[in-house]
Length: 436
Image (cartoon, rainbow, N blue to C red; front, top):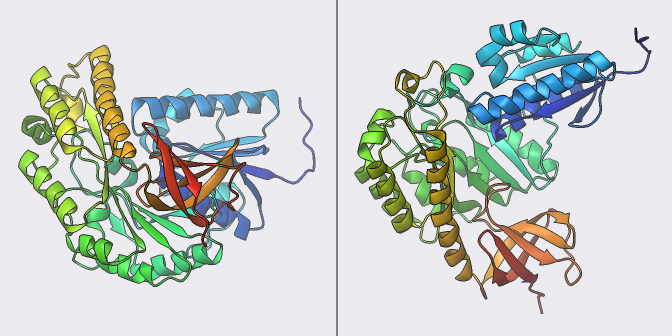
């Protein structure tokens, strides 16, 4: 039996899943630091907190494998305690407690005070915006709402995250000012649904008003919008985007499909005609804006005809950025009542077909950038390149701009004007323009 030492505890927070989980881990770490706890992110520690994802099959598998890995370390004596939180724990706590009982405690997405208590810390209500950011110093996620009221048939997020709840504008401004004070220059606004922001507390869609207040925060140079729902999109946001240089000409708007019959079964609340009209509005009101979307293939009942319609639409729409997922049959969603009738190999082939089309579109759009100048922010140095992004690119999911570090020197976190010299499917090569 291992002898316990008197060494000071070090809490290792491990984050799996989406940017909302990144934000939640940062809040947890901020609370722990305020309690004078030693806390690290994905480094060695004798107490481990795993913030899990429970969205689709692959994410759940990764979460379970990570839990099992640290339970094994606990049994070997290299870790003292293992706690599990996040979406997987919220959704499957009774099953997890039964199947992996060696975990010390499981906590849901709304049980931060309980988790802190288990870590011998107090929940400090006064900590508005106090976080330990884990992203590169120049950007940070700003979660403007929690939960979702949409009835999408395939999605388990409302089960795990609850109803939509907006954060008041004044609290978000305080948080933005604290982030700016720590050197953050780019805010990436996230929520399950940005479109719905404000309806619960202001009785109107208030995203445009929020943007106008965040623009005033000194030190913030870029504000980026992620995860807007198409139905009820507040078009006054486009006016702010067009007129305010701080708001990136970029939007992430998951559309999921284009076939009317599939969209109806998905309970998306709109059809092909409305989607195309909205995209037309985007491009007319903000010329040159980058539109990112995500699609699902292999949804129950998706016929070859439905898929061919989707392929043609992707070809015609020429999205700047696009991601494609295969349908995951999730318990307790309304789509779970349908027969998961598209074979896995067909789902994978369809996803590959969509991404092949998008890869060609991305290559063509990137070739048009050669010889043009762009403002870029430098996220990191990797090998012999500084790696940056334009306002049209979000971290981790979009194009990157590669600048030869042997020819040009730029500090990480700084903005610079560059000229694109070459382009591939998803990478741009550039040289710094030296001001004369």
